[in-house]
Length: 310
Image (cartoon, rainbow, N blue to C red; front, side):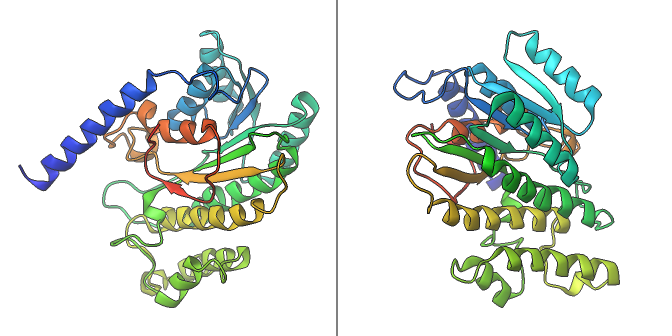
């Protein structure tokens, strides 16, 4: 059996394991949430985001499903409501600060606060062997700066609780700093981003802005950036490193006001973002994010997960 066949066999085995685990309900002592627990899922009108919203609602949570376009978001919510799930819609464009501000104000007025934030909204414009940076600015603005701004605006709305609030950033393995093939070639920069002492929000922002400047002047190919889906990979690298950074700050919060934040890769999922070329279903791809959002006795924070182990 060749390497590809063995890898396919491992994926299939893992899918079967996850399917089995999904059928095992959480026990009463594991369920820290109730129907009053509020979860926000961004970019949830289709694909992985829709599945995350559906699965959280199936577990009995109140879910706020957001989407950039009102019509598609309302249609997605209608589908879930017809299944008896407690899901509501609110328009949200994570690239627009005023949209985030309006959403935060509405959420506070209606619910008082939230318990879970799943940052799923993201874009990608490369498929197959493509590696265009034509839309790099939009990719970085949505995937990184949009995610970061959502976190900052939602922190004041995170409800205090003994179980802690949770933030899950849907990311990608393509953004791992220590990836063997698709990583930053600048060793000094990579070390700074890997080192918790030197890591800062300014460093992450500067790295993204340096790349965008090189895109504008045409020198990005010589910048030592990841060679696969460069703009998307860098945007997710920024998400992963920011997750580590903010987790350290959250760890200083007193008991009862803890916020746990992690990021995860859903895998190569059959969605519009992969041009339907993935090998994993949205249901399977959503599993890790849902697992992290509901993890009992949450003590893990600042970590990257490729798959759940519930």
